[in-house]
Each structure stands twice: as C-alpha cells, then as structure tokens.
Length: 454
Figure 1 (cartoon, rainbow, N blue to C red):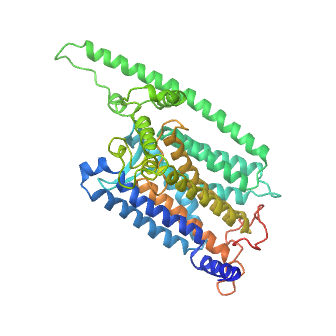
Figure 2 (tube, rainbow, N blue to C red):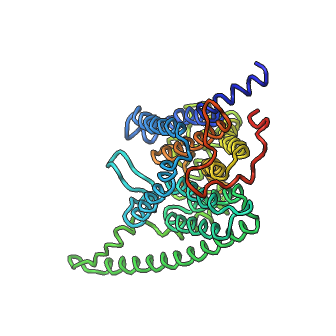
Figure 3 (cartoon, rainbow, N blue to C red):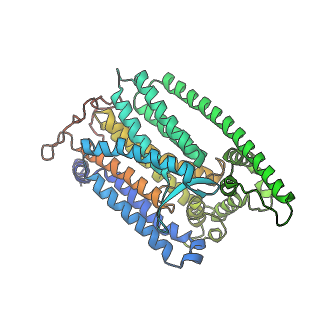
C-alpha cells in the first residue's frame, strides 16, 4: 500500500469512527486491565472467590466500552450534548461533592464515596470533578478568547471554578487537587493564555492552598485536643457511671485529620531513601512492598500471573497496580505502559493542531491531560517520586467510577477527532460553526492540515 493510500485509509477510518491511534491505545489499555487486575487480585480472591474480581472488572470495562462507542458517534458541538456535559455534569458533581463532604463513606481516613446501590455501585465524586472541570474550562476559555488570548474576566471565572472544585475535593485527597491544577495549567496553555497570566494564576492557587492548609491544620489540632480530652474523661469515669458520649468522636475514629496525614506522608517521602534500612510496619508497608515488587521484576519481569508481592501489597489491584505490572513485566513493561499514556497526550496534541476552533481543541487536550496526568501521578507515587497517596491508574486499576469517567473522556476525544476529520468532507459534511453562540473562537495553535495525519 502506497503512502497516499495509507493516508486516505487513515482519514476514512477517522471520519467514520474517530482517530485510530486513540482507539488502539484504548484497546491496549483494556487488555492490560483485564490481565493485570486479575493478576493483582489475590486479596480479593480470598474473600470473593476466584472469578468474581475478574467478572466485576470485565463488567465495568464493558459498560465503559458502551459509553465510548455511543459518545464517539455524537457530534460534540450539538447544544444538547454540550448542555449535558457542561452545566448538567457540573451540577451533579458539586451536589455529590457536598454530600460526600458531610455524609460520605470514609475510605482510608477520608470521606471519599457515596453508595448508590448497596454492595454494588459506589460513586467517588472526585473522579467526576476531573471530568467536569475539563468541560467547564473548555467553555470558559472558548467564550473568553480575545486576540488569541484569554480575557481577564475569563481567567477570573476559571480561577473561581478551580477554587470551588479544589476546595470541595481537598478533604478527599491532596493529589486530586494537585491533579486539578495540572489539568487547568495545560488547558491554559492550549487556550492561548500568556505565560504571565498563567504564572499569576499559579501563584494565586499556591497562596489559596497555603491559607487552606493552615486553617485546616489548626482545626485538626483543636479536634484532636478535644477528642483527647473526651478520652481522658471516659478513662477517669468510674465503672457504671454515665459516660459522656460524643457523636463527633464516633465519626472521628474513622475519619482522621488530613493535614497531619499529609505532613507525615511528605516527611516519610523525604526520607524514603533509607527505606531499605527500616523494618516493615503497618505505616510503611505500601511503600516497602511496592518497592520490593518493582525490584523483584528487574528488567524483563517474572512473568504475567507470577507476582509474589500481590498477596502482601495492600491495594495492589488499585492504587499500586503499576508496581505489580513492573514486577510481572519488568522495566520494559513499565516503560511500555508509560509510553501508552504519553502517546495519548501526543496524539491529542496532533488533533488539536488540526482543529479550527478552540472549543474542540480544549476538550481533546483537556481529556488527554486528565488521563495522562492521573497516570503519571499514579506511577510517581508507586516509584517513590511523589508521597504516598491514592490515585488509580486510568482504565487499569479496579474501580467502577474511575473506569466510567475515563471511558467518557475517551468517548469525547473520539467524538471530537471524528468531527474534525470530517471538516470539508462532502459525503459527511460537518458544520464547522457551533450552534451555541459565542463558541466560535479560532484555535490559536492551528496549523495547516497538510500531512497532519501521516
């Protein structure tokens, strides 16, 4: 097949189904997910049986695949789709974040989830927030384009949106808030914002986070002092007397002060070079067993399904699945998985350069940045570059909410790539002007389409 025939075939597939490279990355991640999530589920097998973990994972991946197939066939600039994706998703996200903040289930010392169907479906709103912030910022930056720059009004609106989401999410995990800021920064660059404005916005977020951390740390200290006083009163009370019961203490025994947890994790991470000399304890077992798994893997790994540490490493099937991947496939397999996510971001950048308007550009790069940054955060935590925290590996770690959200992100990217590929196609003509007024700003990073798909 000649180069021109390959290009024509490539364009034809893109016009019908979306970018083939994105499809290839998505399918490869599905395969890795099925194999590695089952291999890392030793702890779950002990309580759920041999086949239940893989059945649940395949069920979640199957539902996610339905989302991808349906969304890639939808024209992203239809008003109905945009109204569902932007204000509709934002309302659901904020309401669920507020609910979880006060009434959510405590997971690993923080309120993170809400139960939709007992024993079957649990929702983690922080995952929804990552998807929602991409759609909100895409809308704000598309509406506020001015001379290939983002207006001050648009910058303030974006800062407000990120601040609201960050404030609602920070109790459920520091890395989620940092991930939110990373996504916002990448979208600011593609949106055409000047580096000076990006710098000002990052300084603002840093100051805001500092104030929040100080206030939260003081509140945690007061709460701990109050609980200690209550424990002393109970200890000193005579047997059979009425014991003062503190309702807040019941929940506090489950939910811990996060500022102290963050400080301890950062302190442990700073001195992690001496882990080899430390005994394995309940506090450092995740770090210790994850490093042991990676060291055991070596260059080529011990083989799929032959992991030694999956039965000892807590959360091996979710927050530490990358360590199991490295153990079973070695450094080579770990680099391959890393390159898959980086390739997704690179492919999204190529699609962005072919887009005529800023809205689809931001949707594509925002979704790709969200997936890639989350993967990088997960890997960095596993290898010790970042402090210990919970962050799933997109599409590979177990968890229904994360899989569904990542699937929606892939569906949106494929929808936008399919629509862009149809620009100028007489057989499948696509309206290049959005129906919603004010979203027709030109893409400041567009380049001529010649040879883009080669």
